Length: 261
Image 1 (tube, helix red, strand yellow):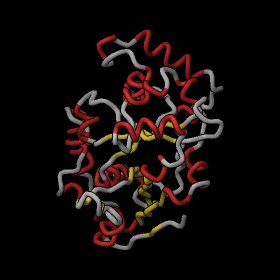
Image 2: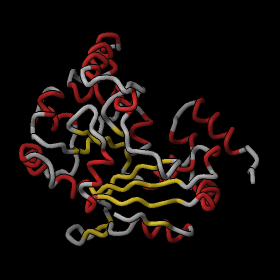
Image 3: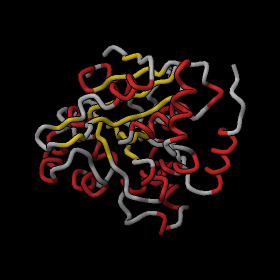
Image 4: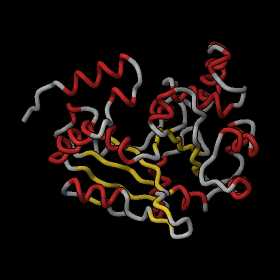
């Protein structure tokens, strides 16, 4: 799919919310998952793939994370809850972070001021269209629940293990997984994870094979300062998205830095 390059704030909104009207519901409800990145050339690569370790390392990482973490850190003992908690706290996993909110995605595309000389990008994946490419067992669970994304409990009905999940189909597939409300940050960021059927699968490569399910909105470097200032005015800031003193300090440091040419 060709990139959509916007030129101003109004066009950006039109593109991000395009197609959100759902006639059956009589409501504006976007079917896109959004991911903001500071650099347009940055790949959709999971932290586990970037680690560059052999596939079996995934099991070792999760096993030791479960062994050393406090038991109350995870609601229940589902591998899917453990995977979500591990991703949330920085362990290399096969998951990628997404959000239901285009504004949160715009925040992450404009969070790093040292990259304002580079074009950013908002990835949009139509998770409803992506669901049509899932193995039949996963599609059946979505139909039974009347849902468009998975929960940990729904994934557990398909498989109790990552190995079992990977064997649901011979080819690669991607599922979108809404994590449990582990803390304020998960809730406020309207978080969503993409989950692929292999520890080292490349989501970009999969999307390139299915151009009908995604698009990219290029955020020109020349527009980043305007977007950032207007997000601040809309209270989409580090102070909100990272609750606590660390987030407050990150926001104040960026907010009061001088604008560089």
